[in-house]
Amino acid sequence: MVRGRYLAAVLVAIAATSTAGAGIELRDDRGVPVRLAAPAQRIVTLAPHLAELAFAAGAGARVLGVARFSDFPREALAIAQIGDASRVDVERIAALRPDLVLAWKSGNQAGDLERLERLGRAVFVTEPARLSDVPRLLRAIGALAATAPAAERAASAFEQGMGALRAQYAGARRVRVFYEVWHRPLITVSRAHMISDVIGLCGGENVFAHASTLTPTVSLEAVAAVRPEAILGGSRPGRDEAFTREWREAPIRALRALPVFYVDPDLIQRQTPRLLEGARAVCAALEQVRRNRR
View 1 (cartoon, rainbow, N blue to C red):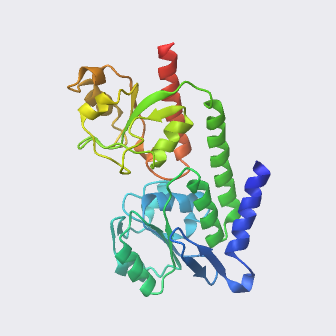
View 2 (cartoon, one colour):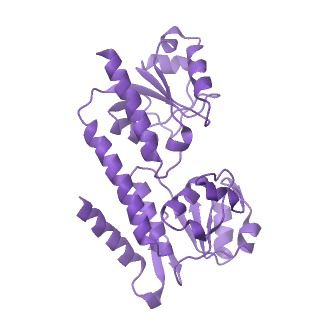
View 3 (cartoon, helix red, strand yellow):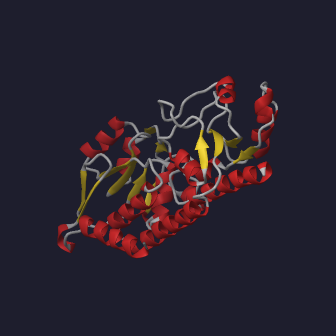
């Protein structure tokens, strides 16, 4: 398995760089080939998770612009901000003269990305949707910035950690889970969301897996109707006590009686290597539910 991952990393590097003189070319998640004359030295990231991915891939020292709320690792706090993910400051980005802009397809405005491209900036658009996209994007950034060894270490560590959890909970009793990503209005996730992948990996069953939208808004009555065995989630870091209290005070008795587990949203709602920490927290919570039901 390790050999296979190494071969995949080599193939990414080959696809990204045909010869030293030809520069770098890599297809992004739009299917658009992005070309660099040389490895990226001046990088701007347009979402917090992209800054984190750049640092994890070994390119953090080259990041000179980040989106608001880019707070991990701590070094990202000292980098100039270029707006938030939903509305970036194109002029400020252009003034930084980046040779690579890492963008988020569903989080950034398409018009902003088009303006940056018209200004001659290389924009690599990403759309992480599955757990496997985290190591894939780490390797892609490593190829674009010529930091492949660091990127491969981070990608392999993530794959190995997730693989260990998958093996550990492969035969575990299924636990029906309601996952809250926001409280007012109450928002959860469908099976198309990466959090649902984590729930499944830990031997859980997302009770709203078949919802038609990625992050459906639901009522407390709807949650009670699908009969979860546990409630997990958290909308803001550091609000574990408030999260538990809100569910203990729910107006529906059946929901008040359920076990409640807070998961730091930064560990599971950002598509980064820290998802492994979030997955371990989810798996530990579901295992506690199983132990208490024996």
